[in-house]
Image (cartoon, rainbow over all chains, first blue to last red; front, side):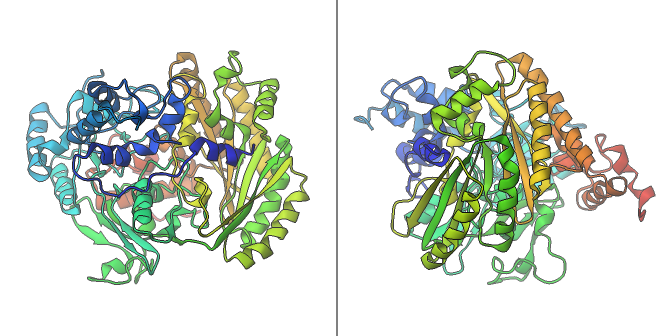
Amino acid sequence: MSRVMLIAAAVLAAPLAAAAQPAALDGHALFHAKCGMCHEAGGMGTGLLARRVQPAELEKRANLTAGYVFQYARRGLGNMPPIPPGDVGDDQLKAIADYLAAPHGGK
Amino acid sequence: MPDIVLPSGLTHARLDALRREFAGVVGARNLFFDDLDRESYRDKFAIDEARHRPLGAIAPLTAEEVRQIVRIAAKVKTPLWPISRGKNFGYGGSAPVLSGSIVLDLSRMKKIEVDVDNGTALLEPGVGFYDLYDHLQANKIPLWLSTPANSWGSVIGNALDRGVGYTPYGENTSKLCGLEVVLADGDIVRTGMGAVAGSSTWNLYRYGFGPAWDQMFAQSNFGVVTKAGVWLMPEPESVLGMDLEFDRPEDLGPLIDALGPLRREGLLQANPTIGNWLRAASMVTRRTDWTDKPGALDDSVIDAIRKKFGMGWWGVGLRIFGREPVNRTIYPILEKAMTDLKPLSLKPTSWKRGEPIAPTPNMGVPMTAPLQSANWHGGVGGHVGFSPVLPQSGKLALDQFHATYARYKQFGMDYQASFAFGERHLINVNTVLFNRDDPAMMKRVDPFLKSLIADARARGYCEYRTHLDYMDTVAATYDFNDHALLRLNQRVKDALDPGGVIAPGKSGIWPSAHAKAPARAKGSARRKGRRT
């Protein structure tokens, strides 16, 4: 397999084509806009998590709590850098954390 | 948690007053001064955690707010460190050179205006590659981005720091066309045709009338860029190309000598990047999967990894973009030039408008997966780069490769590198992957980088970009006429920002009154007019 194909295989899917500006405090849209580049299919976070946990995509996880998501997004965890509040405000991060902690029916 | 570092002359009482003034501009909810806030703006890939600690951050929404913040900070001579999105990991991210600086976080400034007919975008600094990609996709705009390997960051931040992409528009800084800049005294200037009120050609013609200033604000601390025009590539009709692997380290020289003329002639419109095996392998595997032996990897492990993933020692992807009949005419010329070199493998690639796009940077698609290389050592990782500019000569590049590889082995580090073409130059990006959980390794990183910088300077080469830790060191290697460029930069800084409010220390530029200003630059007045 060539290295370009390896990269493509690692990436798997193109980035989301969601609307550029998420609706205010819509956790799902905010997750795509603020976290999707790393935590959807093909992102850095998904690739690294897949080395030790399944499912690796956060939206498919059933064991995330809102407090855990908020805490480690802001502090960083492992190779995930901390997300500063100027980039994702507290209210936005809370909406994302609540969305990830809620049941999604497999997504 | 390290103690709070206050800038010189700022007391806690005066900081409280300063915060109240800032809150009057952006609102208290956009000021970030608690311990967790400070922690979130630190350098994620720091070599030394104690350095580059911000005092806090402020996040404006408009250029007018930036202007007011700069004026308030200037009154008390408190340094600001502007960031677009702060995702340039390996160069310092969101952290300032000078501890105690307040991060001016422009992430909330996310306006996008696209001129579809002319293929331009007017962007604010908080617009990331994913934001712009999604905007183009959602609005079915047939324009492509030029994305870097880590596309988490800001489009114009990357261009201003002279980052690169992999399409024909890959020299991102050269695709800037017209800036809006807040100066240290709060004045707002627009460059090029933007200097004409109500201009319809701001983002179409770079130079305006008289001196052109866009590059003055790249990698500098002469102002805060609050808008920039960027040219975007029209979606091509077709993309043809090939992915090549080469078996031996020595294959680098002939490959460079074959690609250089094709690039200069224009048959290759995009800048190829020749990467070594670890540049690809560090994304898909970890060192700990192969060996627990410390020190630089030996050839038997390298051979095993290469065999498993079918990698050459070097690999390169070539792409040609445009009308299909033209591409089909060029392709055989490239194919012959490459097969003459006897590559390990050559795999053709083909895409036509309307087909699904492979999500790779040479197709203008943003990605973050290459950041997985931070996990190469298995722990909490990171990397810094060492990136000298070389001539497009196979012999000289091979000499540089051998010298650099020997240093990697001497310091017990795993060699990851690429040789990225420009139109006339090569940038030899050497990535130093480290394990922040390994204190012994972390102690080797700084002397290793300093030895690489000194080695390169002895050969006549200097870096195009560097981490916060090495800005003074690299600036000092630009030494013609006893560092005349450093003196010029300092004279400009003194003229525009004598109090050092905007990013003191960026690219080794300090105002002359600052205690950290290098002595060789402080002598500027005495040396004015000196020639060699």
